[in-house]
Length: 110
Length: 117
Image 1: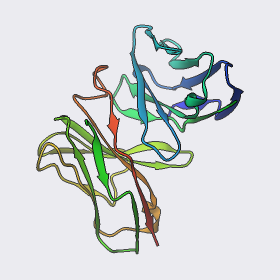
Image 2 (image 1 turned 60 degrees about the vertical axis):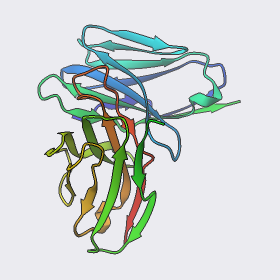
Image 3 (image 1 turned 120 degrees about the horizontal axis):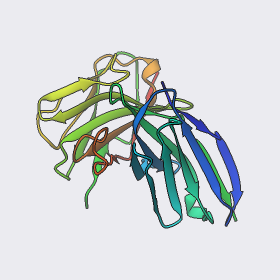
């Protein structure tokens, strides 16, 4: 039931784009995205509800395809500050449980 | 400053010695929750509380207790810690139920790294 995140890790140069995917085997009500820097607490990025939402602020955006039961997080023109581990959390339609993925580690190099 | 405060940040203890990790939030949030974070497993919910005196089990409640006597505090109690409870623990709070309300993101504390020997 844990959503699957891909890739597990990615290394980019500053200015490059990244896409992080989150897939579930269950029908979803919503998808949550958080970023965690090493040694710190996870920080909220966005929540997407079913209905084919797309959201974004600054250069970080996300989409939610409820038919495919997956969400993607897009980071464009990545900055050094984008480094960290990105977690998706999925809320299932059937039981409203919030289950977290294992995370995607993003390393941005100058 | 709006925040979730956990104490202690680091704790080393021995098997069987009861301990409490405190969690306090100053945002008047209804919902509070405890998670443990282990490598490769992401965040797993231990217990959560929708309001004062209302608590529910999460995914991994065995070996843990919680209480919600006041709205701002949500302590995590390990009555008899064991080495498999060695982990990084996070307390989190939100205004409403984060599962169903898109305007209720979770605010996390800075974590407590617990080692049980």
